[in-house]
Image (cartoon, rainbow, N blue to C red; front, side, top):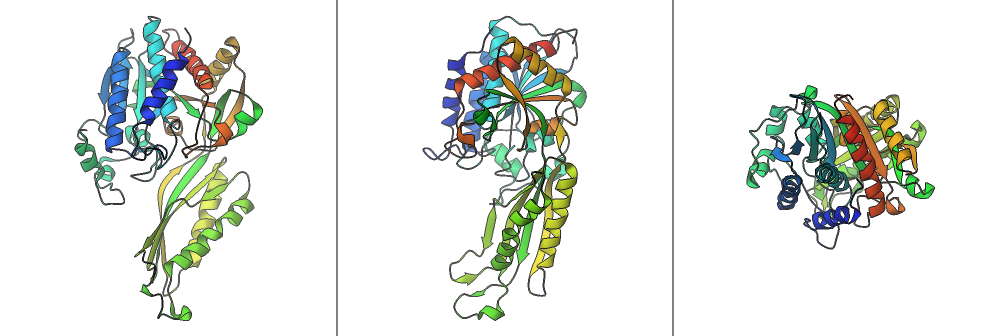
Length: 410
């Protein structure tokens, strides 16, 4: 009853081909052609492993193996299958593939669960197209309203609903999941950091996930000719934005306790080489292990931004996402540890510095999360890589845990 490493690696390789940037990492944005190709592959495998396949009104994919207990809540295993631009082949995708491997092991070993088993592939965890992040899980759990979704547009002005329809998805399907139908959620993910590799430990059992906030900041100035406008007569939105962004490292260090502040997206308008920028829009990602530090950092960032406002420079801040730090379920952590010991797989406890769908589900059901090492600690880049043997070890732990959680007396 052991995972098939070769099968796992083959799934990774095949899904990595669904990218709009061949040779330059995986770029698979939600509701794109690449999304459609990947979801068709995932659904084909779900059917192959004996699951009943469905999609909700956000395009999240579910593969269900019915249990023997009527109307019982499901044990869900999975992750997301979207990517950042020019990302790697393992982030999110590995967790979906481990879900498929769990389904394959249930089928091959004739495991009949009492509680249903569901494999899930979630959309838009990264927020690379529609912003905010964790859209599939947040929407599924009712944290994104129908009204909000209807007006959701990407940077090109394309509405999410129109993009869904363009690849054959139906946004009128039921979007929300009753939490009472979920018994537990299990997610395997690559660590995206160096700790496990440095310790030479193949499994990290996640105790908690950091809190995070994502802000969108707009700086409005006044355009002008780059050659004819004197320096003391300018209202340069980009200069104001640069001064704000440059202050973030010092602010984060002063807050301490692992607080980090990052600007990863920057849009300059009108974006001409000989035009003084009249508007800049940029992202601010704030994370920390304790909620008070997240809140302190948000307050200080907003104060900093407001301090740059003058009669000629206007500033505004919109909070796109706020999620407090989340603890993983103690019982599931115990099962992970017992299973690792039984399988003689070394492990350690670890906290997650990245946000994951599990942090959304943790407000509604018992959640457990496992990390496997990332080579050189790299992620969100083409060089992202994790060892197949570590994936197989993680799959064995998740499979055995899913077996226990789907038993009738658990």
